[in-house]
Amino acid sequence: MLHLIVSWFLSALALWLVAQIIPGIWVRDFGAALIATIVIAIVNVTIGPVLKFLTLPFTILTLGLFMLVVNALLLKLASLFTPASRCTASGPP
Image (cartoon, rainbow, N blue to C red):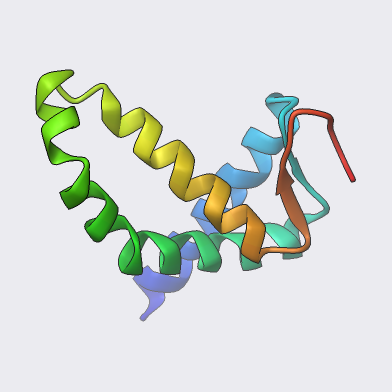
């Protein structure tokens, strides 16, 4: 259980740091990063395998590079479910 909590906090810290560095990703505060990390995990567990299976031919054709597109779509989908964080091209809402 401790490993799960530490992993969750480290993932939230990584998300918060990425939001500080990359201008297209915005996270309000560390609490929002904790919530966004849970949402990203839920989206990856539920929708991720289905989307990865459906795009398997493109992934094989591009030697795995299409997984970048799939992961970007999953991240964008997770940002739609998280009101405290946005993945936008224009900055904070």
